[in-house]
Amino acid sequence: MPSLTLLYQDAHLVAVHKPAGLLVHRTALARGEREFLLQRLRDRLNQRVYPVHRLDRPTSGVMVFALTPDIAARLCEAFAEQQLDKRYLAVVRGIAPESERLDYPLRDENGSRPKAEMPAMPAVTDITRLDSVELPVQVNRYPQARYSLVEARPLSGRHHQIRRHLSRRGYPIIGDTRHGKSVHNRFFARHLEAPRLLLAATGLAFEHPVFKQRLTLECALDAPMAALFEHFGWAGHLPVDRQRLTPLPARNP
Image (tube, rainbow, N blue to C red; front, top):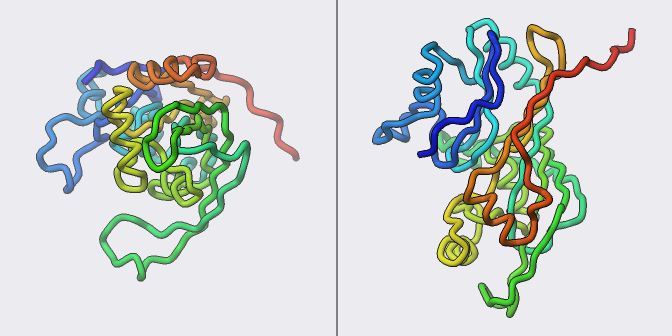
């Protein structure tokens, strides 16, 4: 597992690049796991840290932790109310729409109750196709294989929202073992050295709970995903690690 990259740190919060495949914290479903992001970050900083949002285990990218319980409570409230902007990059099967809003309601997927008993909750994701590629190989039933680079901006926070929305629209994310297509997942794993979920949280922006400025965080891709972008000719879309604090826009009286 690669060493942790700190994207931002002050006396109140810290942001890190979560590696793909690393759980954020211990869960009942991962009793055999011995390494967690929360533990690694705590040991790195030599102090307690408090997660304020989540990323799925196979998803890489920017993740924020509070350094005190009070800051954690404030950030959790703001994040729960979607007072933030999130940006993800995903590699999907097919030529995705140039731009579209996906607003399929989603049921919870926590497994504690039958799906039929779970109410469908509103969920909205804006997607934009940034690039595409056509490979002269037959992966499924077509003589060529087409894939797209998609920017996804979720406007709500449902479980697996981006993965489920893109799959339902017909453009599943490569490497998604639950909502994707196994034949394409195997092709990327065997021939393109990409055996993981190709979804990365590359941007996060929110109001700093103390400084009252807008904190914008950007996160580079990990080496395997960056190499795939280079191979497909998508290097111009590679994000870089960057952070900035800017004044908040004036509020209407």
